[in-house]
Image (tube, rainbow, N blue to C red; front, side):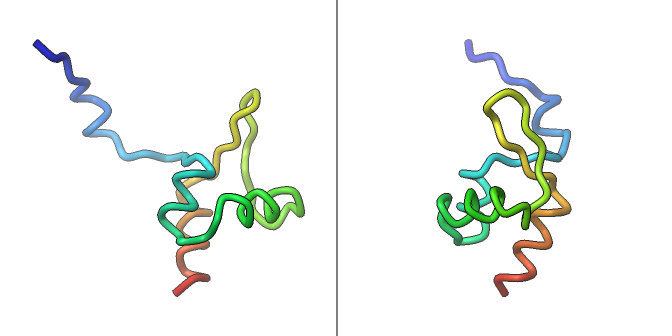
Length: 65
């Protein structure tokens, strides 16, 4: 029997990885990483992980429309 986490489906995601942002915005991971290095995209680092908050993702989506 597969165990599911009901809490994760009920809680909306607040942070996204570079790969997830690329998928949603249609930008390449390389272009997103370049913008991160130029401090054009606000983000947080947790170890080697780079996370982008939902508000910033929504702004990026607005730029690409």
